[in-house]
Length: 179
Image 1 (spheres, rainbow, N blue to C red):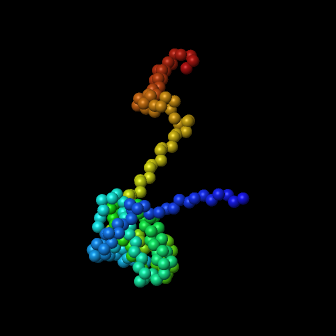
Image 2: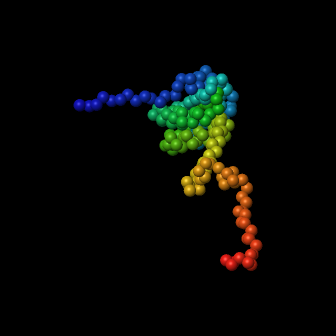
Image 3: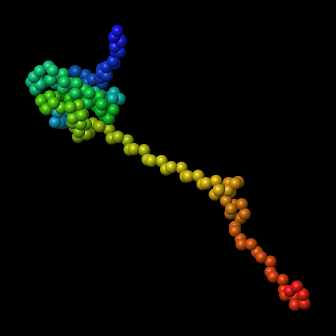
């Protein structure tokens, strides 16, 4: 008997993180463009949302087959999904696929690296916070034979060190027979 298959939850780009379609033409007219090797980035008007939004355009003029257009969409969407936490809040990004994304058989890593590079050039990425400073290790405890019993040092217990005073020798007694 076959075991029942588990339903896999798809990692879709949420609707709120999608670029509104009515703003596509305004973005193309704005002409804030940053070209890359695999994609061309258009910067849209800023939104008031706390996250970035993505729009994807795959032209049938540059990518002839539906398979190529769908592959390009998947690659761009996944690259954005992995990098979306680094975008400035309210950024609207429109990505136009180039034919090199399919002809060169670009991998996911190449598309993600290209997207990151052009977003850095467009200043859409928030600088990552500085790494936390390494904590100093706590001082090593002294071995038990070096630790004072009551927690005080010698100087705290006895005050300033003074060498012991010896008694002065008795004056010579020439008449003493034991001398």
